[in-house]
Image (cartoon, rainbow, N blue to C red; front, side, top):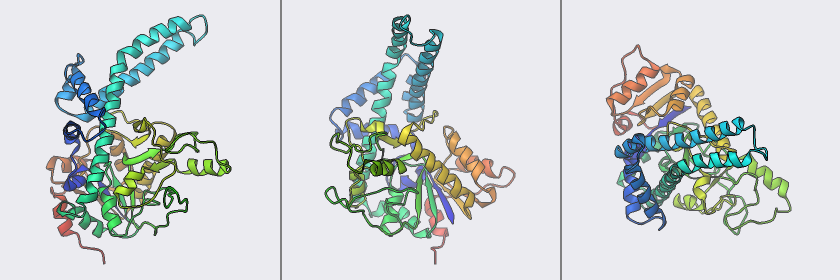
Length: 390
């Protein structure tokens, strides 16, 4: 079994931005007015607030258009607020009737001071979600055009049993593998997704087993957490528990990820996930480990899915015959990824494919600091050198 670790440099070949380009890409997309009508004005208001912010950290993060830095500062504001509220409760001796008024008054002063931070955080994640949906839809008509030649060739290099570990949110590698009959969403992510044939036909969607497993360590566009504790909730409304409630609850808890139906349709798959939550606040159920130095795995279904993905990734790296890291630069914020690679990979089995010399050096210092590093190499060059499987 070979393991391929993919970064943004691979998706870049199919028209996706690198991490440092993501904020501007979302900005341009929302300016065109192709998303929710309310999202564009909300995004512009947040950008104005960031630009003129009295906090020099936020203002500088926005000036550099670094989404990772912006979200990190916003995350810290929220985390520190929670810590402050907890400290207040401890200091006041808990929420007893005698002190609850004073406690609430002091607590609300902190809540109001960071309320703009939460609104900005929410708007940025909504913008990211809308952009990923748009790109996925755009890929449906673009595939298999010229921009996809490298990903299609990559899919042709993989063998049954190989694992792809990706830090990207997009489904570009799934699309290329699906085209070759090497992957399907029912079992291709390393966990089970129960799909119906259609909204009116609850018969299980039957697909051949996936030959290649795609592990999204940071989650993916189109992934949503099932509403925790409400296994009878559907995309339409609240409904009473079905007669076989216990069995329904067991299935819902077994694999707490659901796939958006428009995501499936964008891959060319006619199927229906009855568990996908389509409520007003969908972004709160989105399964993305968004770019931030403060990695938040969340709770409930979100935590279960992401933690399982990291366990799958670690297991695959330990068992791999060869590990090829392609287009991934190991940014400073990815301390979790650094730990995963350092503790799970045999250094002698690692190969680095990146045209950025500094990225190659950074990765090589992690694995083999005392040996000469690989020469910089583009994804395209690597594809030319690697033979197709027999």
